[in-house]
Length: 255
Image (cartoon, rainbow, N blue to C red; front, top):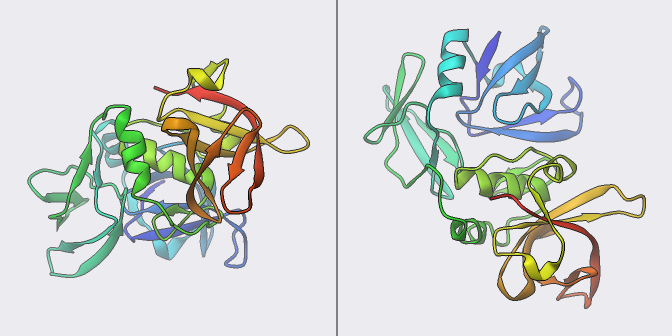
């Protein structure tokens, strides 16, 4: 069984319950494999990053395997506006966030199964330059922190880095600890370039935070909100509290 998210933003939960922790989100146009299905809940695995969790059966649309495979091999077109709307054949409006996928997009229209939609906003498509990473990240400034979030209405640290890279045409895994397994290790902070990722660990040595390196030893990251702080050999120096908030573990070059 296979499905696609046909709503703007849908919670992906740790357990099959409305009271369960939200560990991730699906945004419009994301497709997935349905691993298990009960009367109310489906356990799914996202095609983009293999992330698993539970989604309410009322919040997605079934698709055939052939369409799932076609979606997995098609080029990606993403909505490039912080928020916009799409219009279907019956003039129904659906709001979509920055990073929503528009399947089979061409000339301001796209399709899901037999239904056509019109979208007239800006598009993100293809692999952009490394400079575009920081430029895209700026669009999320002051977005409130939300555990499991990955939209301009609420985002967590790794949802932020994954979504920014996705909009620029690159694929990261979902969690900070998973992203830390990707890319090339840089030996010194001086080797880093804008767009590289810096990872931070806790007292047990577990990587729990990630941010995007900027010019002049600055970093943009989601901590309370998406904000810009100073990066040094020790970690992140919070410009509001005037103290270090995160301990640097490693800096990695992803592209």
